[in-house]
Image (cartoon, rainbow, N blue to C red; front, side, top):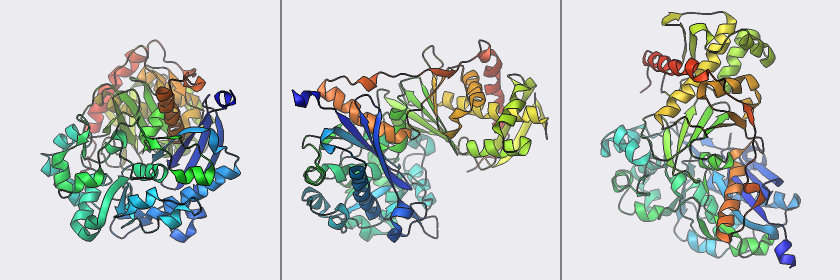
Length: 527
């Protein structure tokens, strides 16, 4: 009877670029404990800056053992925080996308024979044949062009794998290793993503790559959910498929926890390990997005996440296999986000959002025909050069009154988000909503503009600022719940709207979508 009434908890990890974070939630999805390790500060012996090591020609790597040692540290901090590991039913994790881990021969045997008397990093020190290339690496442009050519061009590659070739994607990073460091390639027994590597540390063997994070490699056919033979051939030799292993659905239990954690920390031997996935994939789970909903992360850059029923194949943005109930997810990253909003706020009124919002209140929705595109830095979606473009109706103008510029900035950004989301398959529907997170999600005036432009109510996810970390714990809970047939109280989603569109919003803003598309045609494109 005692066993039945014991509390059930779930553990999530986020192996991000600069730190490792961990979080424990209860059955009600309320957060119990948290811990984190900041790589530069807590592990100075690895000599990282921002969690990475930069080379001279665009190479950016991270020492793989850094992440292992960080896990030793974060586990000890969870102990200090008072976590009772015997109550944890399942765990999962998120990790920075695209990075690769190069396992030496014999590593799997070492994972299977870990001693609970020693730290992980001392036992796994010889398991990695090279440092891990990470998502910030930009040294593979020639490999990108070669991969696109091998598959019939960027459009064909995007149709098969969900994205055109990008320097940070894992496939071209593997191709570069095969081409420039063949000894490392041939000495490698298995290649993991950062997410599946992290999962391997918990499950005691090399864990499989999941479909969702695997979609960020330019190697996975997102339709068949198998490795694309042509892409593998373009990026490595005939051993590449076995080095990668077979991918698995993201909502998979990949095994029970390694005996190491039972001995060292007191985990239950039947604690389930759910496949780890990429941070953006996990954020979609953390925002609890359903098909037709829009996740909007308002940060230094703005990220748009969509649950899709079928994949689009755009040359800008990415389509991945969905980590939750929606079969696919779209990912759009706009480099001009909060920093650009802040720069123009400072230019127009100084460092006060209240003063900026006063300017907005002095104008009307639709902005009397004024529309602006503000790129303080080169934009990713669409790929355009930095600059500022302002129009009054069909006429380009050099400047406008501050109140018109203030609204032009925010309306222009919201219109761009919707225009590109529509290209990815967004459809406006009665049950659609925007779920906002990130620092700027506290700005009610900005959220009202998004509600009007998208013609959807806006909700705010305020349970935790790190949706990827929360998503890891929620995924562990939901996969365990489905397997055990036990409904958890936290699975009932409770959110209320913070902004609702005005009845005439669609009449005002639908024409601006077409205007935006015409304006960006005249802006210099980046190759």
